[in-house]
Amino acid sequence: MKILLVTDLYPLENDHKGVPLAIENFALALKELGCEISVLRADLIFNSILRGRKPYKQGEYNHNGIKIYNQNFLLPFYFNPKTPKDFDVIVSHMPSGTLCATKIKNKYKKPHAAICHSSDVEVLEKYKIYFANALKNALKNADAIGARSYWIKNKLPFDNVFLVPSGIKKEEITTKSFKEKELKIVCTASLIKRKNLTSLIEAAKNIKNIPIEIYGCGREEKKLRKMAQNLNIKFMGQKTRKKVLAALEKAQIFILPSKKETFGLSYLEALAMGCIVVCSKNSGMDGYITDGENGFIAEPDPKNITNTINKIINTDKSELERISNNAKKLAQELEYYKCAKNYLENLKKICK
Image 1 (cartoon, rainbow, N blue to C red):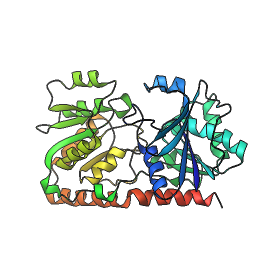
Image 2 (cartoon, rainbow, N blue to C red):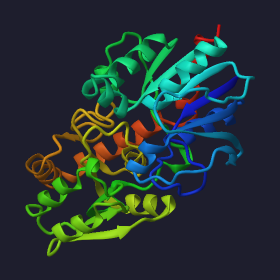
Image 3 (tube, rainbow, N blue to C red):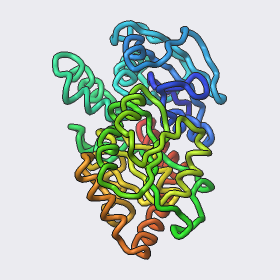
Image 4 (cartoon, helix red, strand yellow):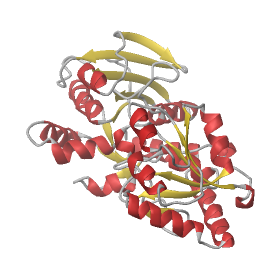
């Protein structure tokens, strides 16, 4: 199958600032399953500058063996998107990708699958004057709609939405037991407002004698460091994924208190490392993580974070080991190629 992937959220180089790797991971997994992948990176320049992303020149790029057509747009109307002409199906990610993909679908009469993220929910709920209607019409025009997580699926005003979770490779799931872990809390996140780390720092004032390590960088770092003065919190900076996984493998508890996290690959990595994961309610992996079974679900505010962490600390170690083992089982269910195959099967349905 020849897939044209349309999105603004695709990296053009290693460590591309402000661009998470989830969409590229899907592309690479589908490529490994035998698909031919090309990417139209429909970059809305104003949006990139607003989010602190580096603008790139228009033209062809090749990153990790995938050809990328970078096309810049000043306004989100996507006049004359330039694409390779030989493709079987269009797959869009993010609102800008879906709006652009609709133009391509109408021009080439090819099937289109629109994959929705937290930003799609935000547009549909907040931007009623123009963008909500434009996106809603684009989604209605799509041949299939996918959601990156359960909470996004539940927010979409459409039936027959399929799930598109991220996956993790089998060899990345730890074989170490919970008994080998240290009593400490790890958080891995971009240090930006949406990750809601201010709530974690506020909660830390009432979590006694447990060290917290925060991995990542971002525009809120200075503010967060100031808030964390005199608390048992270390800012570890930006580290390689290998070093982050090693840190998670040593820690008993992982928390990411984001609001409206699309899926949260960090959650999945922590599950794979056997951490006791605290996930925000109605966000991220809520729906995959079941409270008290393979992790914990908490409202992302200081009081509820404090109560959940204290509950974990006071839970019997054998019970925590059971939850840790269930976390690793969930990671196995969300295995990289298994998720990619499910994704591909849903694309094949609209190409018949």
